[in-house]
Length: 249
Image (cartoon, rainbow, N blue to C red; front, side, top):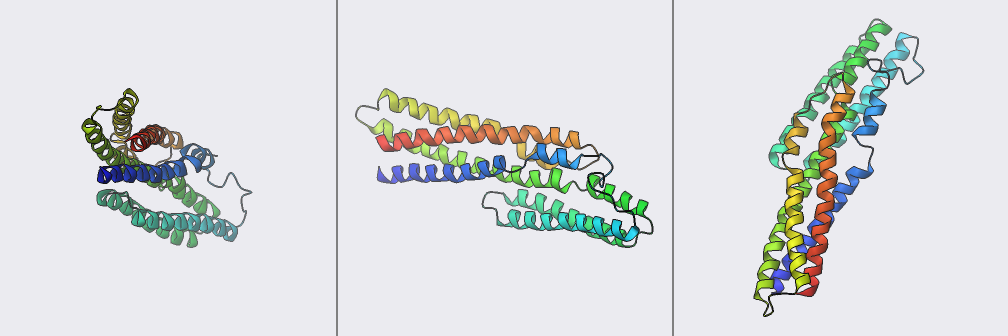
Protein backbone atom coordinates (compact mmCIF):
# COMPACT_ATOMS: atom_id res chain seq x y z
CA UNK A 1 0.00 0.00 0.00
CA UNK A 2 2.77 2.41 0.88
CA UNK A 3 4.45 1.81 -2.47
CA UNK A 4 1.23 2.56 -4.32
CA UNK A 5 0.67 5.69 -2.28
CA UNK A 6 4.15 6.84 -3.20
CA UNK A 7 3.14 6.49 -6.83
CA UNK A 8 0.23 8.80 -6.12
CA UNK A 9 2.59 11.29 -4.51
CA UNK A 10 4.91 11.17 -7.53
CA UNK A 11 1.93 11.82 -9.80
CA UNK A 12 0.97 14.83 -7.74
CA UNK A 13 4.51 16.19 -8.03
CA UNK A 14 4.48 15.68 -11.79
CA UNK A 15 1.21 17.56 -12.13
CA UNK A 16 2.59 20.41 -10.05
CA UNK A 17 5.66 20.61 -12.27
CA UNK A 18 3.38 20.63 -15.29
CA UNK A 19 1.37 23.44 -13.77
CA UNK A 20 4.51 25.55 -13.67
CA UNK A 21 5.14 24.91 -17.38
CA UNK A 22 1.56 25.68 -18.41
CA UNK A 23 1.40 28.78 -16.25
CA UNK A 24 4.71 30.01 -17.64
CA UNK A 25 3.34 29.93 -21.16
CA UNK A 26 0.04 31.54 -20.17
CA UNK A 27 1.80 34.31 -18.24
CA UNK A 28 4.19 35.34 -21.00
CA UNK A 29 3.32 37.49 -24.00
CA UNK A 30 1.63 34.96 -26.26
CA UNK A 31 0.90 34.71 -29.93
CA UNK A 32 -1.79 37.37 -29.72
CA UNK A 33 0.39 40.14 -28.32
CA UNK A 34 3.31 39.10 -30.49
CA UNK A 35 1.12 39.18 -33.58
CA UNK A 36 0.00 42.70 -32.77
CA UNK A 37 3.55 43.92 -32.32
CA UNK A 38 4.95 42.13 -35.34
CA UNK A 39 2.16 42.87 -37.76
CA UNK A 40 2.19 46.61 -37.09
CA UNK A 41 2.67 48.15 -40.51
CA UNK A 42 2.52 44.91 -42.53
CA UNK A 43 5.38 44.76 -44.97
CA UNK A 44 6.97 47.83 -43.38
CA UNK A 45 9.15 46.51 -40.52
CA UNK A 46 10.52 49.95 -39.68
CA UNK A 47 7.15 51.70 -39.51
CA UNK A 48 6.92 51.42 -35.73
CA UNK A 49 10.14 53.42 -35.35
CA UNK A 50 11.37 56.81 -36.39
CA UNK A 51 13.00 55.60 -39.58
CA UNK A 52 16.64 56.40 -40.22
CA UNK A 53 17.27 58.51 -43.29
CA UNK A 54 20.84 57.55 -44.09
CA UNK A 55 22.14 54.20 -45.35
CA UNK A 56 24.50 53.73 -42.41
CA UNK A 57 21.73 54.46 -39.91
CA UNK A 58 19.35 52.09 -41.70
CA UNK A 59 21.96 49.35 -41.68
CA UNK A 60 22.66 49.88 -37.99
CA UNK A 61 18.99 49.53 -37.09
CA UNK A 62 18.47 46.48 -39.29
CA UNK A 63 21.59 44.83 -37.87
CA UNK A 64 20.36 45.42 -34.32
CA UNK A 65 16.98 43.89 -35.15
CA UNK A 66 18.62 40.85 -36.71
CA UNK A 67 20.89 40.46 -33.68
CA UNK A 68 17.86 40.53 -31.37
CA UNK A 69 16.34 37.67 -33.32
CA UNK A 70 19.58 35.70 -33.31
CA UNK A 71 19.86 36.14 -29.53
CA UNK A 72 16.29 34.91 -29.13
CA UNK A 73 17.00 31.88 -31.30
CA UNK A 74 20.06 31.07 -29.21
CA UNK A 75 17.94 31.14 -26.04
CA UNK A 76 15.31 28.94 -27.69
CA UNK A 77 17.99 26.46 -28.74
CA UNK A 78 19.21 26.15 -25.15
CA UNK A 79 15.63 25.69 -23.93
CA UNK A 80 14.97 22.93 -26.45
CA UNK A 81 18.23 21.11 -25.67
CA UNK A 82 17.60 21.30 -21.93
CA UNK A 83 13.94 20.27 -22.00
CA UNK A 84 12.96 17.32 -19.80
CA UNK A 85 9.69 16.80 -21.65
CA UNK A 86 10.31 17.15 -25.39
CA UNK A 87 10.80 13.90 -27.28
CA UNK A 88 13.90 13.38 -29.38
CA UNK A 89 11.77 13.88 -32.49
CA UNK A 90 10.35 17.16 -31.20
CA UNK A 91 13.80 18.36 -30.24
CA UNK A 92 15.07 17.43 -33.67
CA UNK A 93 12.29 19.26 -35.50
CA UNK A 94 12.59 22.41 -33.41
CA UNK A 95 16.38 22.32 -33.48
CA UNK A 96 16.41 22.02 -37.26
CA UNK A 97 14.07 24.99 -37.66
CA UNK A 98 16.06 27.11 -35.21
CA UNK A 99 19.31 26.27 -37.02
CA UNK A 100 17.73 27.12 -40.36
CA UNK A 101 16.57 30.48 -39.04
CA UNK A 102 20.01 31.21 -37.58
CA UNK A 103 21.66 30.44 -40.92
CA UNK A 104 19.15 32.51 -42.85
CA UNK A 105 19.34 35.52 -40.57
CA UNK A 106 23.13 35.38 -40.46
CA UNK A 107 23.21 35.48 -44.27
CA UNK A 108 20.69 38.30 -44.24
CA UNK A 109 22.90 40.23 -41.82
CA UNK A 110 25.74 40.05 -44.33
CA UNK A 111 23.40 41.17 -47.07
CA UNK A 112 22.36 44.21 -45.02
CA UNK A 113 25.99 45.11 -44.45
CA UNK A 114 26.60 45.03 -48.21
CA UNK A 115 23.46 47.00 -49.14
CA UNK A 116 23.95 50.01 -51.39
CA UNK A 117 20.69 51.85 -50.71
CA UNK A 118 18.22 52.42 -47.90
CA UNK A 119 15.57 50.76 -50.08
CA UNK A 120 17.69 47.60 -50.19
CA UNK A 121 17.90 47.58 -46.40
CA UNK A 122 14.12 48.06 -46.14
CA UNK A 123 13.59 45.07 -48.42
CA UNK A 124 15.93 43.01 -46.26
CA UNK A 125 13.95 44.02 -43.16
CA UNK A 126 10.76 42.79 -44.79
CA UNK A 127 12.47 39.46 -45.46
CA UNK A 128 13.75 39.42 -41.87
CA UNK A 129 10.15 39.50 -40.62
CA UNK A 130 8.21 37.54 -43.24
CA UNK A 131 10.71 34.76 -43.95
CA UNK A 132 11.56 33.89 -40.34
CA UNK A 133 8.86 35.08 -37.93
CA UNK A 134 11.06 34.51 -34.89
CA UNK A 135 8.85 36.34 -32.40
CA UNK A 136 5.46 35.62 -33.90
CA UNK A 137 6.01 31.93 -34.70
CA UNK A 138 9.26 30.37 -33.49
CA UNK A 139 8.90 31.50 -29.87
CA UNK A 140 5.30 30.22 -29.52
CA UNK A 141 6.21 27.01 -31.34
CA UNK A 142 8.85 26.19 -28.74
CA UNK A 143 6.72 27.25 -25.77
CA UNK A 144 3.58 25.48 -26.95
CA UNK A 145 5.40 22.28 -27.87
CA UNK A 146 7.17 22.24 -24.50
CA UNK A 147 3.91 22.85 -22.61
CA UNK A 148 2.01 20.19 -24.55
CA UNK A 149 4.84 17.69 -24.05
CA UNK A 150 4.91 18.38 -20.32
CA UNK A 151 1.15 17.97 -20.10
CA UNK A 152 1.29 14.71 -22.00
CA UNK A 153 3.94 13.43 -19.61
CA UNK A 154 1.86 14.45 -16.59
CA UNK A 155 -1.25 12.79 -18.03
CA UNK A 156 0.62 9.49 -18.41
CA UNK A 157 1.90 9.74 -14.83
CA UNK A 158 -1.53 10.58 -13.47
CA UNK A 159 -3.02 7.65 -15.36
CA UNK A 160 -0.53 5.39 -13.57
CA UNK A 161 -1.61 6.96 -10.30
CA UNK A 162 -5.24 6.27 -11.19
CA UNK A 163 -4.49 2.57 -11.74
CA UNK A 164 -2.56 2.30 -8.47
CA UNK A 165 -5.24 4.12 -6.49
CA UNK A 166 -7.97 2.08 -8.15
CA UNK A 167 -6.25 -1.13 -7.06
CA UNK A 168 -5.95 0.17 -3.53
CA UNK A 169 -9.59 1.16 -3.41
CA UNK A 170 -10.83 -2.25 -4.59
CA UNK A 171 -8.75 -3.93 -1.91
CA UNK A 172 -10.47 -1.97 0.86
CA UNK A 173 -12.93 -4.10 2.80
CA UNK A 174 -15.64 -1.51 2.24
CA UNK A 175 -14.60 -1.06 -1.41
CA UNK A 176 -14.41 2.64 -0.74
CA UNK A 177 -16.84 5.40 0.07
CA UNK A 178 -19.05 7.16 -2.44
CA UNK A 179 -16.78 10.20 -2.22
CA UNK A 180 -13.67 8.12 -2.90
CA UNK A 181 -15.31 6.48 -5.88
CA UNK A 182 -16.31 9.90 -7.17
CA UNK A 183 -12.75 11.19 -6.80
CA UNK A 184 -11.42 8.13 -8.62
CA UNK A 185 -13.92 8.51 -11.47
CA UNK A 186 -13.14 12.22 -11.65
CA UNK A 187 -9.41 11.52 -11.83
CA UNK A 188 -9.90 9.17 -14.76
CA UNK A 189 -12.27 11.42 -16.71
CA UNK A 190 -10.03 14.45 -16.22
CA UNK A 191 -6.95 12.62 -17.47
CA UNK A 192 -8.89 11.43 -20.52
CA UNK A 193 -10.15 14.98 -21.15
CA UNK A 194 -6.61 16.37 -20.91
CA UNK A 195 -5.28 13.79 -23.35
CA UNK A 196 -8.12 14.60 -25.75
CA UNK A 197 -7.31 18.31 -25.56
CA UNK A 198 -3.62 17.65 -26.25
CA UNK A 199 -4.47 15.38 -29.18
CA UNK A 200 -2.19 16.00 -32.17
CA UNK A 201 -1.65 19.68 -31.42
CA UNK A 202 2.14 19.30 -31.32
CA UNK A 203 2.25 18.08 -34.91
CA UNK A 204 -0.08 20.89 -35.96
CA UNK A 205 2.06 23.54 -34.25
CA UNK A 206 5.30 22.24 -35.72
CA UNK A 207 3.83 22.25 -39.23
CA UNK A 208 3.05 25.99 -39.22
CA UNK A 209 5.26 27.91 -41.61
CA UNK A 210 6.39 31.57 -41.59
CA UNK A 211 5.02 34.02 -44.11
CA UNK A 212 3.75 37.56 -44.68
CA UNK A 213 0.27 36.96 -43.20
CA UNK A 214 0.67 37.55 -39.45
CA UNK A 215 -3.04 37.08 -38.77
CA UNK A 216 -3.04 33.66 -40.40
CA UNK A 217 -0.10 32.54 -38.27
CA UNK A 218 -1.78 33.78 -35.11
CA UNK A 219 -4.99 31.95 -36.04
CA UNK A 220 -3.05 28.75 -36.71
CA UNK A 221 -1.42 28.93 -33.26
CA UNK A 222 -4.62 29.77 -31.36
CA UNK A 223 -6.06 26.20 -31.10
CA UNK A 224 -2.86 24.88 -29.53
CA UNK A 225 -2.73 27.75 -27.04
CA UNK A 226 -6.34 26.97 -26.09
CA UNK A 227 -5.51 23.25 -25.79
CA UNK A 228 -2.65 24.03 -23.38
CA UNK A 229 -4.99 25.96 -21.10
CA UNK A 230 -7.74 23.33 -21.28
CA UNK A 231 -5.40 20.42 -20.55
CA UNK A 232 -3.74 22.42 -17.79
CA UNK A 233 -7.08 22.93 -16.02
CA UNK A 234 -8.07 19.27 -16.42
CA UNK A 235 -4.75 18.02 -15.04
CA UNK A 236 -4.93 20.30 -12.03
CA UNK A 237 -8.37 18.85 -11.24
CA UNK A 238 -6.95 15.34 -11.67
CA UNK A 239 -4.13 16.23 -9.31
CA UNK A 240 -6.63 17.43 -6.71
CA UNK A 241 -8.60 14.19 -6.96
CA UNK A 242 -5.40 12.14 -6.66
CA UNK A 243 -4.39 14.11 -3.57
CA UNK A 244 -7.81 13.62 -1.99
CA UNK A 245 -7.64 9.87 -2.55
CA UNK A 246 -4.07 9.66 -1.37
CA UNK A 247 -5.06 11.33 1.88
CA UNK A 248 -8.10 9.09 2.39
CA UNK A 249 -6.55 5.69 1.70
